[in-house]
Amino acid sequence: MHSPFVAMIREILERGVKGGVFRNGVDAVQLYISIAALAYFYLGNNYTLSAIFGRDLKAQERRGDERLAHMTELVLGYLRKGLNDAGHAIRQRRAPRRRDDHAVGGLGDRAARRARRHPACSASAARWARR
Image (cartoon, rainbow, N blue to C red; front, side, top):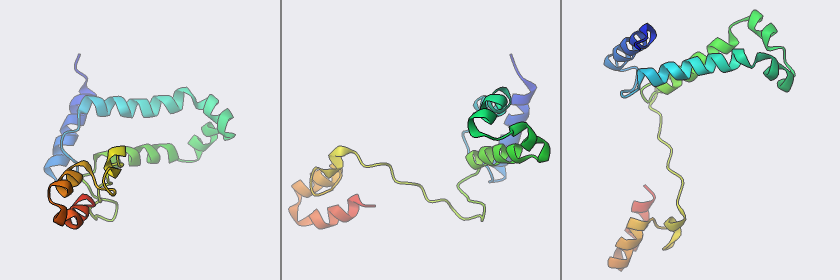
């Protein structure tokens, strides 16, 4: 089954990638499912969420489009090509260290092997591991 919404999303993604605004490799079907899930969960669980958080979410809905603005920002944050709102490049976070990264004085596996092979290079290996 082919959804016209998926075709529309695919076209928007392609234009965004060509324009340098969106990152490449986003699956239009997965994006559609995610957007639908964001909306459905909120609407389908509105009464439960209102009771849990002590807010009348239906009343908030009437006051404005806070939820829509939040969902839009979530989706655009996922799609943007490595830029924050100010247009600056976003620095990638380092992956969490694994336990074996502490094997030799806090050096990672590759740096630790290098330090064992070339003891004189252990200081440079430490610098290399922290990049």
